[in-house]
Amino acid sequence: MGLVSHSEFRSLTLPPSREKNPTISKIFRTLSAVFSSRSVRAPSALHALRLVTRLAVVDVSDASYELFKIIMAHDNLTDQDWEAARLALHGTFQGIDLVPSRMGELGEILKFLAHHLCLQGEGEDHRTSIGFSLKGIVLRSENYRAGPLTVEWVGNLNRTNPSFVNGVRSIMRPGISFALRLYATGLIALTSDQWFDSPVPVMKPEDMSEFCEHLAVFVVNDHFHKEFVQRCSVIILLGMLRSPEWRKYIVTRFWRMLAYCTLVDEEWESFTWCLRNAMEILEFTRGLPEGEGLKWWYGMLWFHHDKLGAKVRDEVERIAKDMSAGDGLSDLNLYLNLIGQEVAKIRQEVDEVHKAARQDMPGVEHSARLRLVALEGNYNKLARITGGRL
Image 1: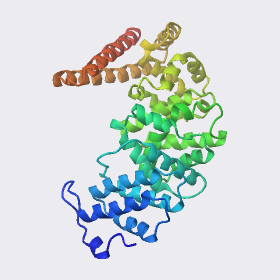
Image 2: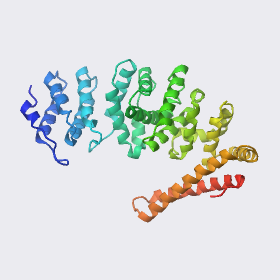
Image 3: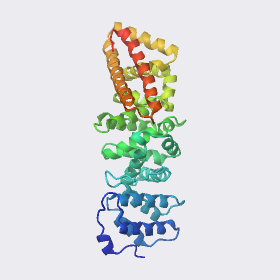
Image 4: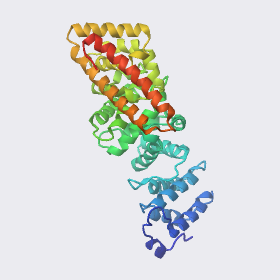
């Protein structure tokens, strides 16, 4: 069956703006009809899809994504279906600035991702396909923050499948492309509350150690997408702290990511768990030989001093008084400086929202002001102990 003639394909040109190319529309209408059917497809269908998805243009991106959803809606996909899905996702995201104009829910992409992560974990190389699917998940998250629907869909992944876990481990190794590790870090953050809190660890101890080392190498040395990586790192670190098994393998230099703890939405399960169990983690970090864990966990407790229970607050303040009288003043001043920077940042955000007088954001300014008051209170309490001032 001929889907498109060679002369038609050669005549394809880049349409201006979002103007549709009639030949591309014709090709994808035919392909959609072909792949909606469960009958055996002629080889020409894959051949045509392979050709048209090489075009990095907007209407190919849109049409490829719609075709991808049609293919992935089937159960018991054949090898031909999976190859077609890979080609369609390639056509969706191959252009660095191309994003489908109407990205829907994540069910199809997550189904695709889980399948290819398992294949990757079994030794096949599907890094390109995994990269495109991870890109789709990250782009679906507004401002790189996962909305409730994203978290719900990701939560349905079989994250403890050994092949899935091995696939994630394999794409976090040094030497894998920056973009793929960046998107994988986002996936790990989205799954952290479930993955690290599993009753039985999803990795063997030696694999957990290697994984933590590879993760730390990437996030600490990253110089791009800073806020995204910092937010993901804190989420992952809090997830590890929640697990008595995982926390033993946290790499020394990874602790410093707690300096960005205010980037984490406070609704995350691991965030609330860690603050409820702050004393347990404080005792754990006291037992670490290098001191970095205690330094940065204690700093986070000052960032969120207002959320601590009375017993923990008293202990945190007692430690600060001892540090101030001894050789710990430099660390206390570091915490003051970091909290002061966050106070200044939130003040600016409050001013900008207030000046904009956005009627559709009534709760944003109120929430920011509440957090500002809390942070200023935490700062002033520490400042009274150290003699600093805001």
